[in-house]
Length: 151
Image (cartoon, rainbow, N blue to C red; front, side, top):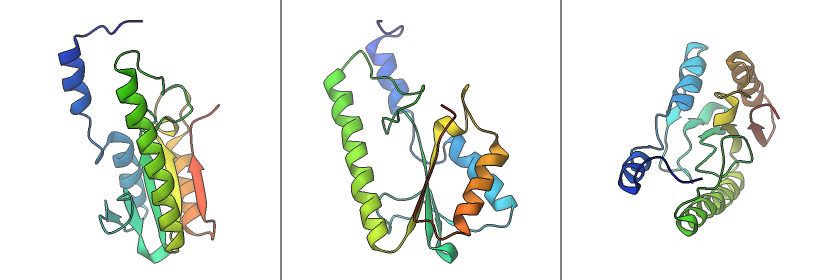
């Protein structure tokens, strides 16, 4: 299937997407803050600049976009145009995730990943459920948690 917009328009649209302060991230942040959790945003001192860092719980949270990290869900589909560029970009993001997670783990940090598909789309979870899973993780000793949309 060909793109419905010109390459120039598509390029402008894609370059406008930012990695910080996304709608899914803001949803999670606001809910956790309202429950009394305090965190550091986008800490550049940590590998991968986690979206939320909870020093008190020695835990970090990444709120990942399904497209940008090649998540196996209904939001991700390999683009039809510039295939090699996108394959290189997304595979690089995946490799960076693995390296950053290993480094965080070696430094004693616990990691939660909240996928975009858990917070929006036809297979999303209830927001209260997602927030509860995060709270349970923060108070547990689990090293890693992944929250994604329904199958």
